[in-house]
Image 1 (cartoon, rainbow, N blue to C red):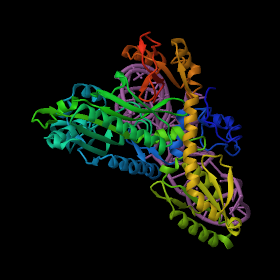
Image 2: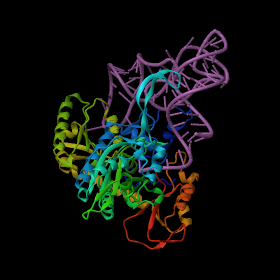
Image 3: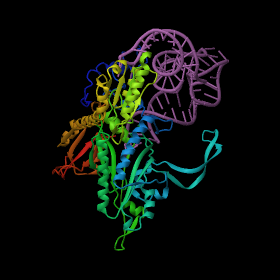
Image 4: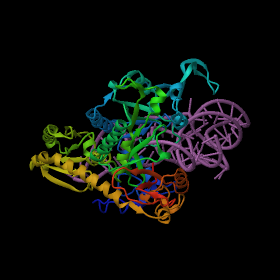
Length: 552
RNA sequence: CGGGGUGUAGCUCAGCUUGGUAGAGCGCUUGCUUCGGGAGCAAGAGGCCGCAGGUUCAAAUCCUGUCACCCCGACCA
């Protein structure tokens, strides 16, 4: 099978896995229920067996989130929400450092506001939740039973924001009078609703959490600088905090944000070699300024429309983190964003030494917490729960905590700890002197952070190919419904990866690629030198290669 | 909105064809033995079988209706 694991040293742990997984996944009701050998991987199925199902199982096993009873909506659990809080904390600082201020705008957008920008309406109309009533009254429901039914119809329906350009534009039009009011640099942390047909935890849910930056500028150049500056912030965050390598690029017309003039993005490759759009930054020109009447008087007293931008990242980033780093034993958290860095597991099954071991662990935890790391201090859990040690260790493995430290009586006697790194095999443990561990813990975390990035980047580079002909392109991806291209029953891996090809943008070509190969143009990279060439689809001249891939 | 499927214990499901009053595994509780890597044995708690009608002496099982969810297609951060 073409699935390619990032190279890592977890040798020998997956060899006997297939039989067990087949039984577990099978619908064969006569499958023997005999005891299986201890699992060789914590997650069933593995990535190679069924990537989409593996993803769901990791989210669940790592206790990041779960499906709620509300269709398409997720419950973000404490461990997952703590990751999001770290994302917020770091990004918020980056936004503040680039001059932005936070504000908050209404969840509800009057339909009339929403209608102001034609392309915008067209783009979002199909996925809007609409509030039409403001009261519940006793009555007979559709199923004939008594209950509460909506009453008090609104004069004007309210759209639950799928994005806030229009409602924020309404404020901007009041706030901006003079060129002295510009630039206006605002960010909002919020939830939004997009009524999607199909949902997947973190990657696409009906309601999700995000931030949306909205800015207004006196001229086109400034707005473009802002657009690219925030793209850079996102790339910086993705690579240096999430350890997720990204390609910065511009979307072609078909993939553009509804109403934008230019849409830029960061694109990342997941372990199944599909692309994930991890963040977007839009240059909106004067489109929304016209729609929302954002005007200002310049120094000469001449009235002009402002130039606006918007940019956002969402809880989808957590999905990207999972699909970039997690393995067949569960989540692996990049240390800089991990809710906790170290779990200390006291081995206390001998009553006579239990208290001493606990004291030793608590003292160790206190010392570690005194150390600064990645803008906070080292976060430590002491897991003294009364459950079996193996169970406990596996729970933390699945949750992806970077470092696991076990301390038993024997370690304590030698003033040592037994440490395992989550990005190494779970049997790859080493004994360290306690003080050495304390002294080097941040170095270890940083090493883990950078090796996670390096591994992800190597995976991407290995699966990125320069393609110079249509035939080569087709062969790289395989036909959309080619059984081999989707690799097995669950679509464990897709064929292909990133194809870099010369391309003269043409919506018709992209439609055709999408229909026939399920491939889209992810972006035209903004970095790197121009390279004159010939579009492999049309033969027209092209100045640079575009990135093509199957995508989420 | 088209095509398919499923609703039974906290979770995953069996039982339904051939009606006879509720099952398994996991999880949970308790006890004993274990314990430096996902333990074993024993006992126990937990379900008016999605909902509403109908057939029948008797319905999880058959019939009708209804609701919900899942999967596959056209959209998306």
